[in-house]
Length: 174
Image (cartoon, rainbow, N blue to C red):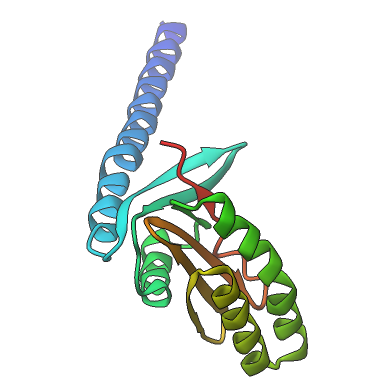
């Protein structure tokens, strides 16, 4: 009789645990993802956003299309992400990737030396020489860089203090 009670209590406990675990999963997949998607789509230039898991680490993947105000968009995305690192996905081409690689010297030198006016001038000169349009902004946390060439756009958020809010941007492969 006592063994049956223990068995019954154990089964009910496992059933309740399974229901709670399943409810948590449904909540995270349905409610949180829908909330992130709806809030992020209000940002001009953001096509979609979702939280994905890569190697056990969560990140919010944000697909963009001709974003214009990167600094403002990133501030909103940080609030939506709730401490999950953000990876921006753009429509870059090889030329824009090459130009960004060349610009990294001036960007890193500007961060280390603190001479951001010289950095901005160097970046604008490099962009003009390559026939690329540059949009550059910064605040106390990061440098926000957009390179445009025709329909192609490369966006990059370079954190100044290594906060880990933004991961390296990627090219949209879809």
